[in-house]
Amino acid sequence: MGNRSSRSTIRRHPERAVTDEAAEILARGLVAHVGFCEGEQPFVIPMSYHFDPTVPDRLYLHGARESRLLQVLASGAPVSIAVTLVDGLVYSRTAFNHSMNYRSVVCFGRARIIESEAEQRRIFEAMTERYFPGRRVGVDYQGATPQQLAATLLVEVEIEEWSAKARRGGPRGPYDADPSAPGTAGIVPIGD
Ligand SMILES: Cc1cc2nc3c(=O)[nH]c(=O)nc-3n(C[C@H](O)[C@H](O)[C@H](O)COP(=O)(O)OP(=O)(O)OC[C@H]3O[C@@H](n4cnc5c(N)ncnc54)[C@H](O)[C@@H]3O)c2cc1C
Image (cartoon, rainbow, N blue to C red; front, side, top):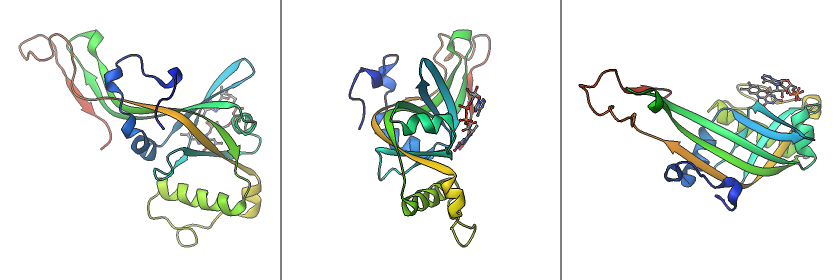
């Protein structure tokens, strides 16, 4: 895993590359922004997803069978997926140096349909556990019916390569370290 070609090479602030954190970021993320092309038209659609850091080259998406996104992905078209954790809002004494603290991953890959009902159930239950730790099928909720599974398309994206990038720390404007300078500077923490 990691970047293998120019498409996943970080150009701006390459020192912010945190490739070794990619799996952790994907494991903690809640929303995947999924980019694909239908003909000449690019789309980016927000989706829930499943990711298991013990199988780090796989990411799962699901939705209605008729979903454009899933139909395009199921055809084997290339896909790019971004997941972002926002850790803080960074304010500076200068307009230019306002920023955000974040950790983010961009993945490239291709998908295949998961046809096996047993595999679908395994992944959906693991996905529910990822979003709702401790919730158990058959105890806290009923599993999907065969009809619900039949109406749903589940795809497994094989991640061919990924990049991860993070910004950390306070504002870096020319006056931000000087408490006597006009204005204010600091970080608004977000999340835990
Ligand atoms: C946090 C989050 C998680 C989601 N998780 C899932 C999921 O796991 N599975 C799933 O199938 N769907 C999920 N959705 C809904 C998903 O974003 C799409 O709306 C949905 O998949 C419909 O797909 P479609 O093929 O009908 O879209 P399309 O027919 O391709 O959409 C047509 C147009 O509708 C608009 N559109 C579609 N979705 C959105 C949107 N969310 N916001 C604004 N405009 C939109 C866009 O302009 C798009 O080009 C999620 C949405 C959010 C915000």
